[in-house]
Image (cartoon, rainbow, N blue to C red; front, side, top):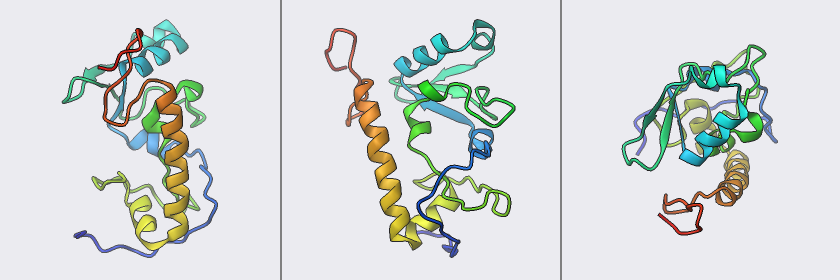
Length: 160
C-alpha cells in the first residue's frame, strides 16, 4: 500500500486553479511529444526559444523541457504558452483550496503531489473532478496525435 500517512486536507469543490505558479516553479522537467515541442517553439519568440534546454526521455518517443522553474512561466505567474501548453500541464491540478496557507508538496506518487494524492484518497468528489479533468486533457491529446499506447500519429497519418 502507501507508506505515507494520508493527511485529511480541506477540500473545496469544484476546484479551480488559483494560478499561483507553484507547480511551474516546482517541476524539474516537462515531458511532451515532439509535436507539442514544435507548437511551443512556433508560439514563443526566437530569443526565448534559444534559451530553452531540451533532452530526450528514456523511451526516445518524447522530449523533456528542463524546467526548474519552468522557463515558460511569466513573472505574473501565468503560463507564457497557455494556448499551446503540453498535455501533461493540461491534465494536472493540485486541488489546494488556499495556496497561501497550504504550500505545494511535490512527491513521487502517481499524482506527483502530496496535496493532490491525499485529497484523491480521502474525497470521492476530488477523484471525480480529477477524472473529468483527465478526460478533457485526453480528448485534447488525442486530437493532437497522442495515442493511448504511447504511440503518436505521423504527418502521413500512420502510427509509430
